[in-house]
Length: 528
Image 1 (spheres, rainbow, N blue to C red):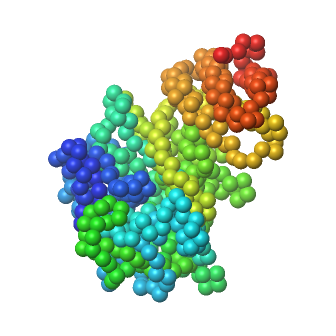
Image 2 (image 1 turned 180 degrees about the vertical axis):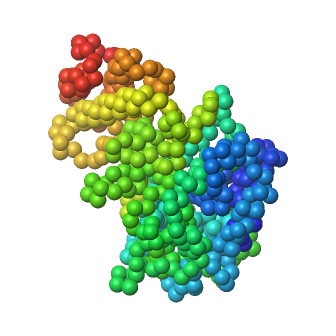
Image 3 (image 1 turned 90 degrees about the vertical axis):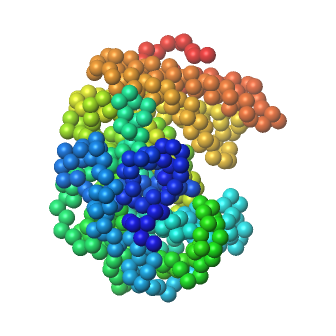
């Protein structure tokens, strides 16, 4: 099977029909392709990056005008097929020659069940000790070649720690990905098609390359040459100066070979499609490509590491993608760098097209070393302000609003613990969910005020909006306190303790420390 010429990507068409297509079919005009339709959310995340990477590699626009032209009038499937054919040899999934995302040569390594390609699959030790309570081992025994190709790409793209010498992905285990997508609710929205989503995240050639000098095919697709192994004494690391920057889309940290000899027939355990050749095992070996150095993936946000003074990829954390991360993911600041693709839409020279609005699609795994704790996925508005002074003022006000919300969330957590326990400091258990509940409850108000702030001129009106935000936070804080304080154990519930915690919360919400820097007038008025 060849991933350029054969249909293997599951999509949803405008008519509601779900079928597999080859990549070059993405712009078919009959029964438009709306979105991906794989059986798993992480597969959708992998496939969208596959398509973006394929276009960035084979059909990157030479100018902004060319990019804009293909956004307005997509290329024909025949044009895309011609573009993709130049690298067709790199996308064979099976055969005697190089195979997609697999070790250059057959390897003598550990033979594993195919379920091991899934990031959330329990390891051997977990299954042996019967600790696979939530994700049962043995639930995925055979998968079709289409799902195997996607699983392989998803693992190489998100690879977490896998034991000694089993390398993480170029961006580390479970990186966050942020993509610009059409805002279909906008009055002048782009067409709601998979093509629009993909092409919005492809950069002009000059922006992406950055003076690259590695132009051989194996500099882009590492499986086309002998694996650049990373053993402690004889191996080597792979930095940006050792490869073409496009390898960030095709990074191959894991040494894997799919086992095509020991197949079975039946229904795929992932997509339920019937197939004569279900893949049941793969072989793996450690010390694959070890990506180090200043790699900055164009689809990921980064943070400034205080120790190394380098920008490192952001990863999802417990609690999800609350709006407190919005500014870092969409605008960036002194500590955070929004993804390069997102940054191309900012400022007066950005890609923003008249009257069109966009959203940010964020997704990624929350990993605890080798353990997948959760898959997070979220969409937020992408605010685009061309005037630099106005954008700076807007970001400052948003930062104030987030800072205020973060403090209030902490107050709610602390005071609910005071209401629950006679000795809160000694109480066991994680109460971080109280903060997350606060951010979830106040998100709609945050987004509404953010939209108002976006369309407000610099000055006192912006300050008034921040003060209005304080009133919204007070309302949510007291409402959540009333709810959670009543959830404590009846046997230890203490009305006097609850009343004291409530008074403490009110004092904190209207305290000088919280409000002084925002210019909010202090008074005795309390929200009910």
